[in-house]
Length: 498
Ligand SMILES: [Zn+2]
Image 1 (cartoon, protein in one colour):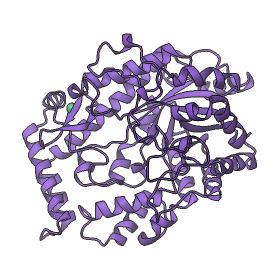
Image 2 (tube, protein in one colour):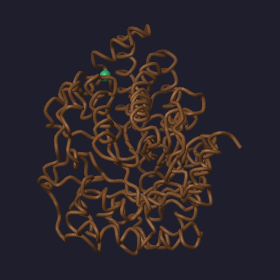
Image 3 (cartoon, rainbow, N blue to C red):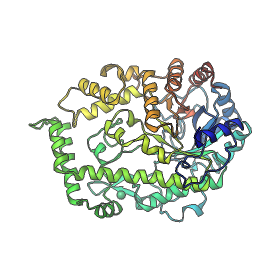
């Protein structure tokens, strides 16, 4: 029994709550405090609006009664509609909560930002004005503790365009315009996230933190290797003063990087307009990479800044609260784009993560895979048919689902969840918890797959069949129908996990 297993076993014997001796942070094997030793984690994401609309006790009752939820991932910071607010207009409201659309959703910090933690950033730590003085952590945490439930702050890399000081943190795109995202290398950005981590950990006795960044580097964005269409993962960036300075330090020729990306962008634009290069799209793409290795160097530069964010955040969190969990939400594009997947190395993550929520939304996954395939098929895979591009993707990504025309309507099979879970475990060498994100009623187009109870049941079972340490019902309670949550509970009970 190694030290980690021993600590986990001891914690389990002690009831799984007291985590025993706190390991030193600089020890070889001590990066991972034995957090969440009492697997399985049965989690759900929920935003402030649900507790305000339905009452905290009623929501927690539902979590426990319907699905034996033991961990709440509270959406504590976002300006986005994915994890905050009610269902956006155009999607049906579920069978609970206020039956009204919240078109005036604003977002921000749904707890109480404490200004002393944000002195080193230009980005204003705005309290979300959506629910007056309501502090979602202050409200939910004591009620959850009383029931023996854990609370994890769940916050994401989505900052509102109008936030004061954000203009001094934005990425600069190839064209010189600011992107809608923050540059991960800009000290204002880094200090904003570090401040938030410190704020949540010092101001509240929460059980852990999860941060998510649904973005990719300039290469993937240039070739539209993502679901959600052009720009969904960001722009061709970053060419800000900090990124340029870092490039120069590494000896990367900035002008050639710009020229390479200009040519790459022109190649993709021409391809999307139906122009096919004489030597074909793939050869032309590869020729650009060999002619301008700076394209790959800039891609590395972008990813290094994000990885540094993970690492810095993790080490800060562990220095403040060694026994509390810190982990990451891994973007769904990981399932579609091999270019993005190559940059999500589970072995690397294991050095600075207690857990990963790997998005494995199989129901909306069909629609999203089809979007990726059609996007990539119009750039570097234009030599192939869309169906061939899908076949190639199945082969490379190591799972299978239906034909392109049926994907959106059918979704991805539960076997995809099992395969992806097993892959995450194999890649991480059991050094961190793997909690697949399971989709429940995530909005899709009218003709696309809609969540049914049996789908949720199958996906939860598949995750545990693949060896998962838990599951995380996503994206937010305010969009889930109760029958679908209940189906997750049925699977958990059938598997005798609780
Ligand atoms: Zn930058």
